[in-house]
Image 1 (tube, one colour):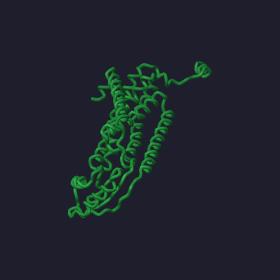
Image 2: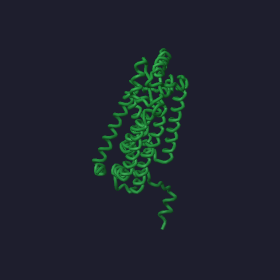
Image 3: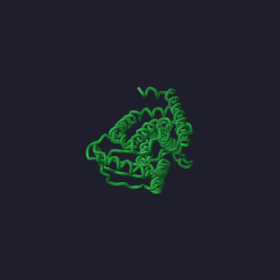
Image 4: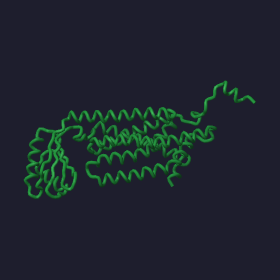
Length: 311
C-alpha cells in the first residue's frame, strides 16, 4: 500500500512536503537548543555519587519518596538490583549537608536498614574532559563519513546523505532539549550509533538511485521518477529493518530501567527520523541540486570516439 503513495507526481509531492516538514522541525530544534539548552547529567556537570544496599527489597518509588523527605536538593536515584541503589546529587553548597541527612535517615530506618558502600565526588573538570572527548569522537565520525561519501557517491548524493545525517542529530538533540531529558554519556554514545544507522539507510537509497540512473542513461525517465522507483524498491527492506530495530530498542526502553532510558529514547528517535530523512532528504535534496542520468554518463575523449566510429 505504501508503494502506491510513491507513484508519479504524488510520490514526488509527498517527498517535497516531507522535506519541508523536516526543515521546519530542524528550525524548531535549533530554536529550542538556543533557548533551553541541554540538561547535562552528572557525567558532565560533576556531583556526588553514592552507592548503598538495603537489607531487604524496597520499591524504587517508595525509597525515592522517603529520601525526598530528608533531602532538600535535586537528586537522581536508580536501582542497580533488588536491593542495590545508586544516588546522584548535583554539586551545590548544601550538597554535603543533604548527603549526611538522607544517609542518616536510610541507615537508621529499621524498614530500610541501608548500608553505604561508597560515596565519591565527581569533579566538573572530569565532566568537561568527558564531554570534550565525546564531541571529538562524534566530530571524527562525521569527518570519516564525509570522506567515505565523497569517495563513494557523486557529490549531489553525498551532500544529501550528509544533510540527512546532520538533520537526524539535530532533531534528537532538539527533543532532549524540549523535554529536558538528562543528557549523559550513554546518550552521547547513542548519537554515535545514530550516525552509523542513518548513514546505512541513506547509502542504501543512494546506491539504488545511482544504479537506476546508470540504467536510464538514455534519459527516458525523469530524475523524479527514477528516485521514486529507487525508494519503492528499497522501502520494504527499510521498513522491516527499522521495525525490528525499533522493537529491540523499545524493549530496552521499557525493561532495562532508568540507566539506559536516555540511550533508548535517543536511539528510538534517531531510527524514526533517520528512516524518514533517507527518503525526504537524502533522496530528495540531490534532485533539487540537479541530479540526473547525465551525471553518470561515461565521458569519452575525441580519440576514443574516433576509434569507436571506425568500421
